[in-house]
Length: 341
Image 1 (cartoon, rainbow, N blue to C red):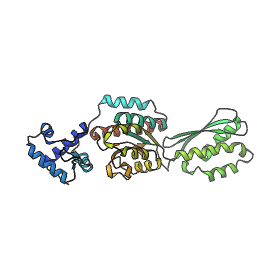
Image 2: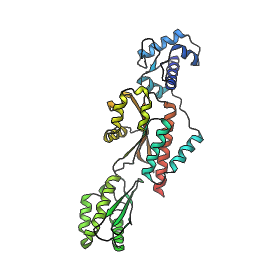
Image 3: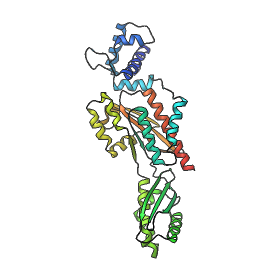
């Protein structure tokens, strides 16, 4: 679909004014904002044609026009002038995220918190999911006579830890044996290979130490499973209650956000570096009155996970898209730095 210059100017003005006010836009308002001189009658004719093309909607017979979902899509793809974040804005975001650097899970939670606050939308961040991730480090730290903390770090920077309780007192010899065995058997191996079968085979080879040390390896297997499973950090769902245009559909949307499996499918469907799905472009009916902006972050040049927002279709796309992209790229850099330390 191609529009003439005048139609594009009118469509862009309607989208931008509606984003600001949330009220239908009439021809008189457009006359005051358009960068060209044109009569009110001409504007009304152009608006009528844009509506026939499916780019504008008319909520009421006597009211002005608002962008349709197709109108938003045309605006984003062809007309939008992106807002550039200032150095002060970037510094403020960086300052917040660096507080959580070094802890991948906390960093992703913080990213969601910051993005929810900046955008007044629901924000989400997924943990890295790389089935080819390998074991980078395994550590055991005694925290009691029969308690130890097992720590697993993967090549994608994910850190998981869990407490192990043994039936016997943990000795220095057991700690040394655990470290030796894990270094020999797991370091550099795919995380997804650490499962029940491998652990059973390993424990069977331990001989007299099997009973004492088996709880340690069971916990390690659980951590490996958690490390390769995607987790979604969701923040700011309550922000959606402030957007009156969502109407009664807000209840379905909030219920959907509680269904982690479906939400993960919706996010994982965004395969591009930046994906913007508007209204019925979303794969789930519960999101058909919302827009989703999702960007993917990289860790050491490999795909890591995704960060994004869900809000009404009336979003300030020109400002929010750069914010999502900058925050996402910063998360990727901080996670890469964590891994390389």
